[in-house]
Length: 77
Image (cartoon, rainbow, N blue to C red; front, side, top):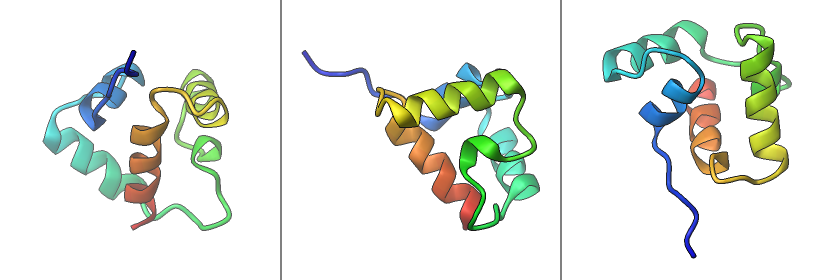
């Protein structure tokens, strides 16, 4: 059985954020670049629930981990 594949808009929906392309681009431009020493889940703009979700997905290498990594890279660019 194959794990579900998620995309960036689905991650934004999961995080309770607007998921339209322009909203995602605005979020990235507003919150980047993240300092190299700041872990994605520790960034100050997340709610505690959002940070917990991101942290869990990365730690457990869960099915959201790939798209969370993608968001992490985008926020560092």
